[in-house]
Image (tube, one colour):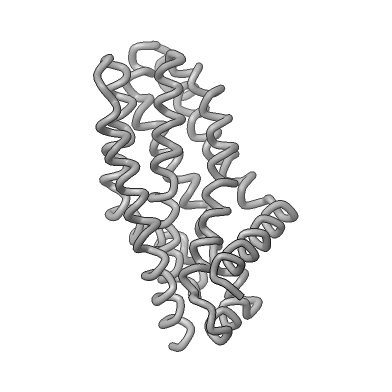
Length: 225
């Protein structure tokens, strides 16, 4: 069986699993909405202040939502013995990891994008600024989710691992957060945003190109130990 057919088969499997049990996707989207909504409700309703806070709030909400979605990314496969089957099948584990993360990136991103368009009204963002939020989320989500998956792979065999995943992830994701929020700040000041988009795209490409190999190796080591 060719590597592409294996990849497509794994994508279909992950897609069916997530569609049949969408709790993780729904919870992460709900958490994103809660963070966005609670900020305007708990601080001054001054539109100027809300606009100043918007870049940080949106990106913190995205990071926390994807962190929540990734906490049990490999846990069920680990408990069910699926990861052991990956290792003994002779199939490159990195291709299976890439397929799994591709599905999770799409399914977690879609509801967040729809919510961000609506909830941006709470921060008095213009149509162009909302578009910048959406594009930057699309470009940065692979980088954040692949880094979160790397953290989750370290903690696959552990219980109560949410805090440890966060501690591993937060230092790694700082560049994405800086350039992501910087894109919206630049849009608010009517400055060019393409440079920020290019950096976010580059970070995601690097994550997609290299992290599946690292994640596969970490999973292999953690299982053999």
